[in-house]
Length: 117
Length: 492
Image (cartoon, rainbow over all chains, first blue to last red; front, side, top):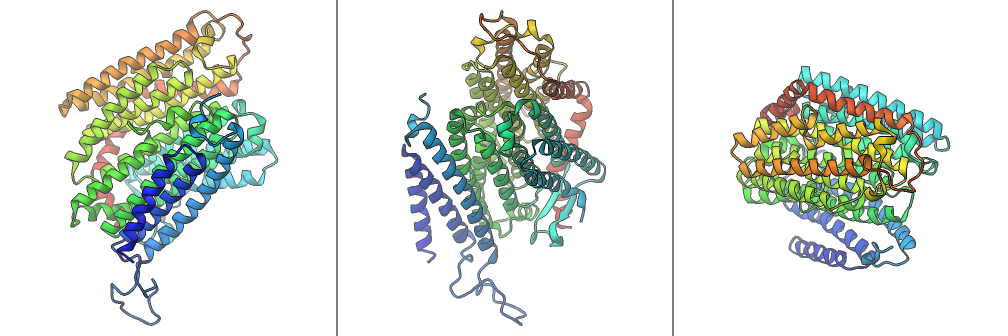
């Protein structure tokens, strides 16, 4: 998993940037979403590899006094990502509406055609 | 648990929530906005007093001990920023009554303004990096809606650019937070400051510092990341663009000052020299951009950029005196720049345009407004005895002391070009005879002039009491350079 994820994240960033460099508004917003996802996954991997531990949910077993450091996942990155996903969802929903309004105003989804009156 | 620290967040939040309940009544919403703005100013002044005489104040939210829970930390820098921001908010709320049309009021202008302010206050107070991200988002989403509110075509264009670049910046900020957590294992700023000094891989910390520099650099509109600002700030109604101009980029500057004095100070010969180079380029490019413009608010938007250069110049020099000058500069700039946007709104109200070629003769018809423009404009350009002169003097002296002559030259040249560009607005809009067919002049409402007068009076007062305010700024700079005390105050 931890060898796969960096590749996935890199691919997501690359795809996101590529989409953002297109002229279409729809692709721009897809690009923004992809970059947001890439950042979220990055937190998982960056947390010293302890954001994801196979079979180790971030819960101390009932009655346990001590827990081996490496056997459970770190709960903080998961909490961070959850918050970031919620915020990202809200912002993206707003951006979609805004882009739709812009589309209706301008009458096309060509970003280069925005400035012309 | 110090409840006073939560007040600057709770007051705008309550104000916003209650005015959402009073959705149908514009009168109630205005009254609530005014009341919460006034009480926020009172709370910030109290907090400033508390911090000035009692040292750094810390509150652990929910009584979770620091570095597990979220802490709110008010040092002198935060308290100063809060106080100035709440002054601006109060001014803009009064001004909005005359400047914002009914339709925008009916679609939640005042609640949005409150939530924007909540985000700003939260960003100034938080002591946790991820919490800072959350406050940034609160601030951004409110500003997105304020930017687009009204739905005019020009607003849509600018909102699209503004939203896209700010979302990009947030994604970079988030990535930086993730990597930093991976390196240090905490996100509490005080504990991070303690741990970042001895991580195994200092190169990685520099790379993360660069991520933060880009993320906050977009928000603060530094060279070469400023393009969204002049593309967007001239389109919303003047009251909204005044609060954007006064507050939003300055939150970015505050975040830069905070992380580059508290967290990333291991490799200053690289990071802070880079900031210094960026500062010089930001000043010069911003002011050259302003010279090329012919619309009042566009000119002023470009001047925001060049002024941001001055603010981070002090951070780049990174001495106690330079930081104090930067803090002084931020305070002066927030007041002056908001005021200039408010004046440009009054001009817009009088003549219905901000294009310099269609303006003229305002000094003849409303001489008082002319004087009110001159005070902040000359202060921005750095004329003694106004506030801008002392701000620039402090920075230039700091630059000379640390022998950074190139940046001092850039600062002086930028000051002259700013003066040129302010006299251009003066000549074109106020002095030259009015072009034929310009609308018959009405008087500007007192609700518009009152905040302008108040802010101009503060500008003059800062100029006259510069010694005192510079003393406070020096104390603030001493406090942020003394990282030990900050860390101990938070972690105890």
